[in-house]
Amino acid sequence: MSEKSLKAASPPDLEAVNTATTTSSSRWASLFGGKNVVVGSRIAPIPDYLKNDEAEHSETASEILDRQLAAEDGAAIQYRTCSWQKTAALLFSEYICLAIMSFPWSYRYLGLIPGLILTVVVAAFVQYTSLILWKFCLRHPEIRDVCDLGQTLFWGKEWAWWATAVMFVLNNTFIQGLHVLVGAKYINTMTESDTIGGCRTVEFSILVTFICWIGSLPRTFEMMSKLGTASAAFTFISVVLAAVFSAVQSGPPAKAGSGDVVYDLFPNASVTFVQGMAAFLNISYTFIGQITLPSFIAEMRDPREFPKSLWACTIAEIIVFCVVGAVMYVFVGNNYMTAPAFGSLQDLYKKISFSFMIPTLIFLGCLYASVTCRFVFFRVFRNSRHLNDHTVVGWGSWAGILLITWIAAFLISQVIPFFSSLLSVMSSLFDSWFGFIFWGVAYFRMRHVDRQDGKKENKIIDWASNGLNVLIILIGVMFLTVGTYASVQGIIDSFEAHEVPGVFSCATNGS
Image: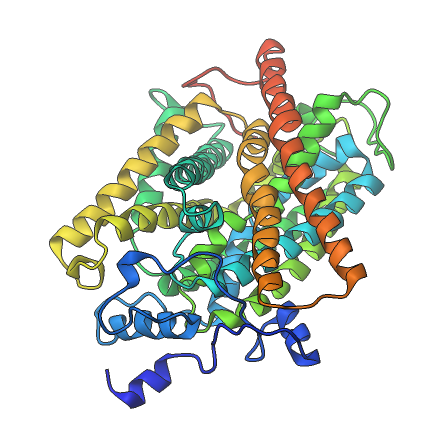
């Protein structure tokens, strides 16, 4: 690689600096990103596979990043190509998604005021922990996904990598299964009056699985970000239309419930602990997406710019989630609320607004499948020409790995065939780690290294930060224990009350 092309490819001044002081500009950069970001020391040594005769003693983040960029120079398939704008498009497509339509259902059990407060609080926690994750990745630019991060975080132990990998793959496959489930739900909704031969819901699920497999074949996030931009735009139109339709329709459909349209500002006395916890987990699941962030950061040309993407997405999330959730809950009320909330609209309105969700139903599942596939692919073909060149082995392996994940997703969609409970299960089992526990531990690991480097912090800020991160870890433990109990009990209650179809049901699951 020529000196000129190296300068064009690599971000300037991305150095790992051991410093005892910080400037005003670096404090702002620690929140919003930019060239003044101070990258702290590593908490773990450079992995053996990164070392070579020429760069064995490289200790800085910029040198590792330069080598990654140089290795891709001239390659047919390049991965570190995303700007912060393209990364923002990926974030928008991940967060501005179908799960927004679970917020009215959550507000039904939490009450409108506590529901809105919890929405903002959860968003603030996720923003803070995502910034911790970003700083951790800056110190270790070789991290390609959350599994690398998990092993680095927990003292380089192999069991940490395997444990993280299992949760990582299960979480992503559950999300793919959710999109197969809702994809079939959409087709059933649009064709409910038609006679379909055979087992309609299973057949529709197979069709959605095949379409999503095809849609997840692009190899780089640069291409996925273009699709993600369209996906987020269509989702925004879908949820805004749903909110407007809930306000202008003459009344909710009769099959959604009965009685007057009534909403509660605070939780109703009849709400059980299981229902309230499930509603809280639904809100948390929609915000907590840190599991994919290391993969996104790993494909940025200048990872210092990541907070710009993050802030843009978080601000949009709070506005959209609160407005859509509150409007639909107020105009639909307790008795008619469904999950997703499209089922609370009259037939024509439901079909119009639900139809704009099609790109997201396909794309977001594809995005998580792609993240899972590159996790396997990068390890199987590390330092191989199949990684960066168009080869039959490379493309065949990529397609095969994706197909396996989509078959697993199809099976999940048939075994847990209901929307809100599937969200709750995923939130309690995986968000406990990837939304809270990991990042509390990451803070303390980085703070320990900074103290060794002589970096000083205001005592009040230091104590407050320590307390906040202990709280973050405890919240994660609560999710894992109490949250899992509530999720499982909710599934049992739903089956016992015959509120959901059985496993591999042929009956329509349309709204």
